Image (cartoon, rainbow, N blue to C red; front, side, top):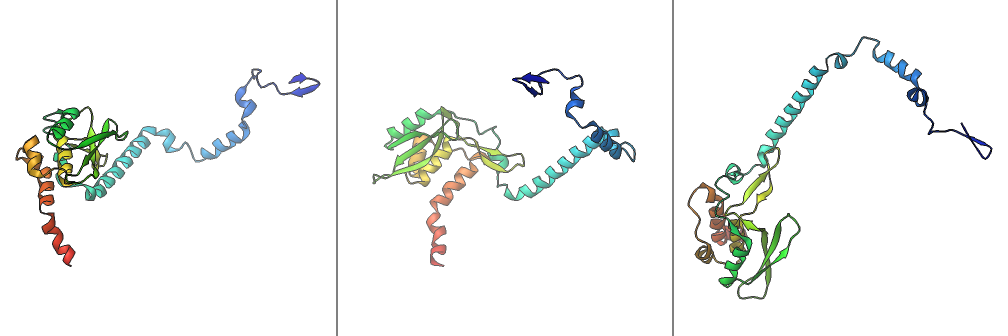
Length: 219
């Protein structure tokens, strides 16, 4: 105890002889331990490795159940779309991509995106109008030809790991900034293989959208 101005105060800075006993109710603790050990030492104390193995097996089983449930959220060709091999080809700087567009009459500009990281937003003026249209985001400072799909731990699509310039090109076509023919005149046609299948399918549906939409409009 400390005497300060005639009053007694506990000196918490002074070293205690037995710090545990001074702040802990040892009697209650000992009684609790006796109750826990009344029927012998618990198995989880005697065999900790077996219980750790049980927990790991339980986690693995739950993940297997989650993975099975997640299969309904997977998409066609995601094994191809998420495989960097064969997709990270024909790299082009983002500046060169924009320059090619401008040299071929596309009025466009970019804005710092902030998110996703290392991207900018591409805007373009739709031909025949003064309307600025948001196209999509571009990877900076460069893009490979094909985007790479991102998968979460359950193998479910979760955005993109990398944005490819063919994805940007398809959005320019879909947003009516460029025709399909003009886009391929500028950047070339894709190789006819499984890697380009989703890109070609996207343009096919866009090309034939009026035919597909007509029955719905008349129903």
